[in-house]
Amino acid sequence: MKRLSLLVLLFVTAISAANAQTEEYITLGINGGVLHNINGYRKDTNYYGHTFKNGIPGYNVAIDLGIRTSARTRFRLEIEHEEFHYKALWDTAKMTYKIKSKIYETRAKIWNMGVNLRFDYLLSSSEKWKIFVSPGLLWEFNIARESKNVKVPYVNPLEHHIREKSYYNYDEIAYENPNHILGGNVQLLCKYKIAKHIAITLTPEYYIYFRGIVKTNYGKPYQRLTLNGGLEFNF
Image (cartoon, rainbow, N blue to C red; front, side, top):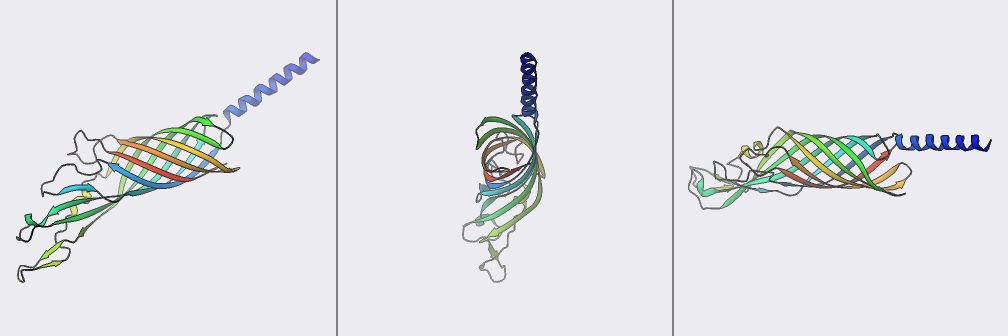
């Protein structure tokens, strides 16, 4: 009898352990933060003599749906939105009408959407904390662009004087970027449980794309750094 009881106990323990290892659940995450592009604009001077620089820091927001596949692994599908900026500087001395040399600029805003497939692997866990490493593949595509001149001189050939007005509208700055681009990324996902089904997240991430964002940037890969915070719900 004791032997049978021991066998039953071992069987129940084995079943419980197997269920714990294969348990699956669904997660829903929302997050947002800042981004910084590296080689995210044309690195050399273009035909018009414009030079390019990073603009103000960009931002991104995202929502993801995850499915746990084992005690340590899950897959997530993420939809993200990015806005980033850069600018072209140009010298008015190179314009058709000879005016006092001064540097002006054109600013560009780029809005992209991305579809990101992530694989999460649990590195460490405790009652409150979980830390994952998350490599992923990303398809990013453009949804809108905008360029705006700043302090651009207007030359009136009849009056021969300068007024601060948008005159030389360099639209091509916003079209230096491709309509879509593929890349890979790796994320460190840190979760802190604040309620039974809710955790706050902190996610630093590195992206590298499979081509330069501008074709002339040969040998200078397009990269991105992001730092996001958010919430994750599990069911």
